[in-house]
Image (cartoon, rainbow, N blue to C red; front, side, top):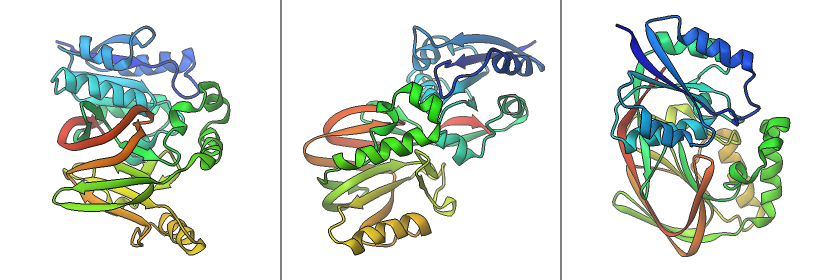
Length: 293
């Protein structure tokens, strides 16, 4: 008896996929013992498709960017479904694909899913919203969801770089109280991120030796407001050398973390608008989902 696969395609991700590429993906996925049902996210977001229709399937495969993957995983967790997920990256930055060393070739990616192994990964809970690899505030965090889709398609990764440079003028330090596990840090921060990835918007690379995607802990990154040139140079050095040992660029490890601000602060969650918040609590959902690697 054939196994059942749900294939969710986001045609708006990244530069978009040609009909030939989509046909190749479907053809490759149908080569083995799977009955494949295809869903295109036009009127409904990938999250709602996964939430409403994934039950009864043995595997859910999504084609799109990191936001599409995040949506699909969120839909499955909301529905309390423990179905493995296959990911065929077709976005612009593809931080999750970079972290998991997934190929960008859709044909190869499809075949690898069929021969891969479901591997448990941690997922974040941002208030009442799930996220796959990052929840953040401050510098550059609005770039992913404010950059027009046509700019992403035409410029690719450069769209994020240009958008980040344009965002520099809007950087303002936020007085923040950070509580993680049983510890507290206070300060003026221009960036704060709760991360389960080695790549952040393609701009920041974390040392893979320091990041475990299934250890029940996040990497919490905090960047203080640079006051003098040496502060700025220390931040750059931490980024380039991947040391994170200075006073201005901090990396913490925590299973739960909360942020308290003096005013509402804009957040981004997996590259999408996360809303304005004065208080945020984030929990690590240990090995909450399995992704085929």
